[in-house]
Length: 360
Ligand code: NAI
Ligand code: MG
Image (spheres, rainbow, N blue to C red):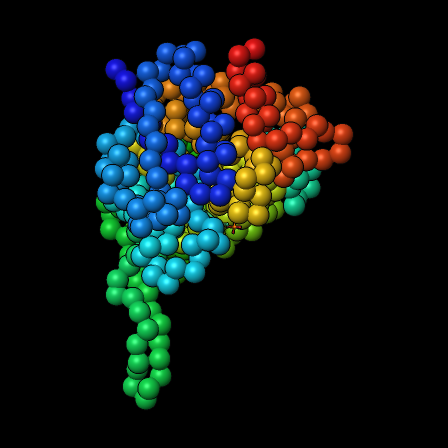
């Protein structure tokens, strides 16, 4: 049975990095007989230029019918002056996320031992770091109502937001996290602020309830302030971390920076059935677009996540990740991860190296 993959190159370096990821996907598709069928559509600034909107109906329809989506990145200075926020490139992404209900955001922070010097922390604290942050993406305080700025008695203005999760929202992100932990080191740390916020008291209760279905996974709890501290003190103590939208936003960016290399970090956003959109954590890097300098590895690693989480091809995903590691062993580096004594290569040469490692 064939499976459909929608490719959305987007803007800036998007098309360059996606081209390399697609070469890798086409190769493993052939080698491992995965039966993947690829199609492409416009999103973001590229779609604004062609159709006047960041998420054309045809792109949304293609996203809805695909089994998985691989995205480059969207945005750039060219579209930053559009006064109407509804037709900014970023709306293309948000539109796909909300229409497809991609609530489960998986953000691995992996530090390849070969790049340990790139971290802001000491090599012995981070070398070999491999943690996964699972962030709830479509609920919580970023979406809760009521929200706004209003005037109180005496003309004093106050801003207010609502932090709300119902138990079904907590349960479904909890399941994503427990399933991921089951496939990894079998330890899950749920991060909350249950000493202060009622919504996270419920969060903690539901996580405990779910734990009964996953006796093979060890569940622990941590307050978010302590989690922030532990992430920079001893990050390797974590395996999988699950948390709400706002805490996850902050913790996943902090975790990403421990690795020191934005060009290496993939991500996934999943729906209830495991369908998802996969993209590098970085943006469209307009400062280096069109120069062959972009690191395609975050996108190639996103493609590996896609195979693992949406396309039931975990063994192929393992092969791609091993190939990336082998390429680093060969001292091949794009500019963003370059250091003394290494061989600097372009975007397409890095793609060549991964393709060669997969064929060896
Ligand atoms: P950015 O991630 O695009 O770039 C930050 C810095 O990292 C730049 O110096 C860039 O050259 C470098 N960089 C990023 N990816 C790289 C790669 N693969 N290889 C080598 N170097 C890389 O973030 P920035 O500059 O804040 O945003 C640029 C544009 O991207 C904006 O329009 C922003 O809205 C958009 N953006 C889009 C995202 C998405 O599509 N998911 C996420 C973040 C930003
Ligand atoms: Mg953020």
